[in-house]
Length: 331
Image (tube, rainbow, N blue to C red; front, side, top):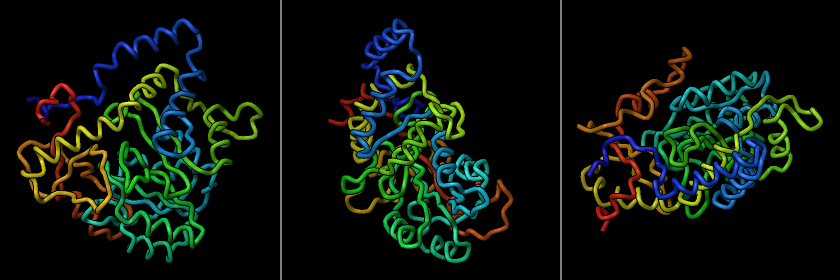
């Protein structure tokens, strides 16, 4: 059993289906802005429950949302325990980052510190990040606060493929959610992203923003289009998403949970996509940490975030990669 070595979450049983799709694209001579991009968006919407717009990267989708909100010169709350892409998106959109502490039990944004910082700086928008594959435990409390105070809430769903909380999917608590399809993600197109939202005007803006503002150039965007080859790969893999997540959860319950009692423990009704299996004790076999360098330190912000600093040095990730060839291990 070779569960410890890295594997992309692509199911080899889909190889021929992908190759046939790529051959169709080659023959069509339409390698972008075609039917597979629309199919990927349709299938992601069917899973996520929200209309979707595909991008060539997480960054493109994030910038589209931030440009629509118009955070230039405004403050945006952001967790420090995240990938640098999250605060950098704010800076690139012309906003100011105010870092918020996380909670130790889930590594995600702390509602207590969020309320404190929001009252202090009066932000126009905020990022919340779903770390490791599970949904931020304080998402409902933070979303309710944002609704009451007119704060735009963006969900960074880069890790959260396949997660749900009593059936509700990431991206549905805030005004928009942004997914990544980077090479290591549960669903991967090599590079790529998806914006999900129930805001029709934001979706229209995003569709233009990813294509230089076409057709009327009323929106000044850039090229964040997803290629048809990447979209075909994503559309095919999305049909496996629930299966992949079920497999990883079954494997974790049988093989990992008994060995790692000191781990992230989910609230009732929550299912993690298990992008990472996070524990709070050193383990001999580890893929490292989700993030070992807090963003507030990388960006040299002089702010006290004790939980974030603690989390950076006190969690580890146990290897867990989707391998359907090991189905007999789940019997």
